[in-house]
Length: 419
Image 1 (cartoon, rainbow, N blue to C red):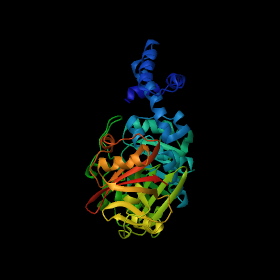
Image 2 (cartoon, helix red, strand yellow):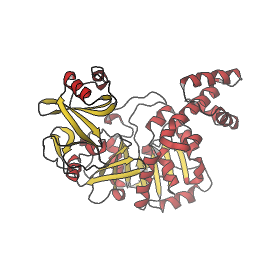
Image 3 (spheres, helix red, strand yellow):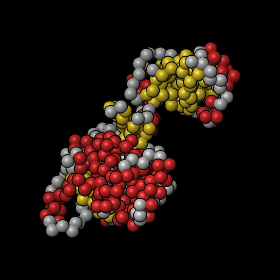
Image 4 (cartoon, rainbow, N blue to C red):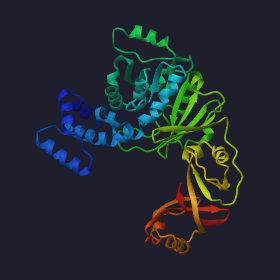
C-alpha cells in the first residue's frame, strides 16, 4: 500500500466504503470488486486500498479473529505480525514481571502493541516506515492516549548507553506531564528488528548482519533494560547471548518465533524454553541449559515426534525422559518407546508395521492393511513426499501414517496410527 492509497482510505467516505464492500475472499471477487467500484466513479487509489484491505481482513482472521474486522494491514505487515493469542502471552509475561509501560520498537501493524494495550500496559509504538506507522496508529486508536504511535528509528527511541528508555515526544500540550508519569512507571522494551527487506508486499529475508537495528544494538538494549526480542525460530544459536532466556514458541504445530527475554522478564534459572500453544491451551518445557539426549534404543510400540519448539530448544532429551522413551537414531529427532503414554510436547504414533523404505515393500504393507488414505512424514531422508506418494497404491478404506526415516545406515518405513 502506498501513502496515497492510505490517505484516500483514511477518510470518512473511504472507511465507509470499506465497510460497505464487506468480505472479499478470492482473487475472482477482488477482480469483480475493482471493476464495480471503478465503474461507480471511485478513484484508483481508493479502489486499490479498499479492495486490498477487504481481502487482507479475510486473511487476517487466522491471526486476529474478530478483531481483524476493524483493523488495517499491509500484506507484508500481516505476514510478519504476531498472532494475537501469542502476543497475549507476551503481554501476560510483562504483567507478571510487574511491567506497566512498554516501548514497542519495530511495532509493524501493531499486533503486539494491541495485546500490550489490551492488558492495561501503557504503550509507545515506533516503526521506521511511514505507512506502517500510520496503520499501527489506526489499529491502536481505540486505546487513546494509553497507546502512542510514531514513525522513527528504534535507535532514536532508546539510548542504551544511558540506560534510559526515551519515550517519543508527542505534540499534545500535556506531553511533559505524560513523559514524567511514564518515567515513574516500570518500563520494558519490546524489540522486533526488521529481518526482511523493506516493502509492503513482497520481501526477502536478511542475514543477521543486515538487521535493522543490528543484533549487537538489540543485545545492548537487552543488557540495559528488561527486554523481549522477537526473532525468527531458525536463528543461529551462536548469536544467542548467554545471559538471556531463549523461548521458542509453536502455535498449532508450527514454530512461529524465538523470543529472547532479559532482565526482569527472564525467569530465574531458565535459559531454554519450548512453549506449545494448541487448542486454546499452553504447555511449556523449561531447562537451565540444552538437555542431554536420551540413549538410542530399538524401535518400540510407539514413535514420538517432538514438537518443533522442543527440537529448536534442544529439549528432546527431557521430553524423552518424560515418556520413558529413547532416541530412534542419535542424529534424528524421533523418540521411541513401549509405554502407551503421550505428551503435549510430542505427536505420538502406534506402530503397525515396519519395512524397508522402498515403494514395493510399502505397497505390500498398504494392501495388507487396507490403507487408502495416507499421511506421509519424513526425517533424515532426502525425498519429496508428494513425489513419493505417486509411487504408492492407495486403494483401501482405512487411513494411516507413513514415517520415512533412517536408523543407523538403514532407510526404513514405519506404518503407524496417530494416538
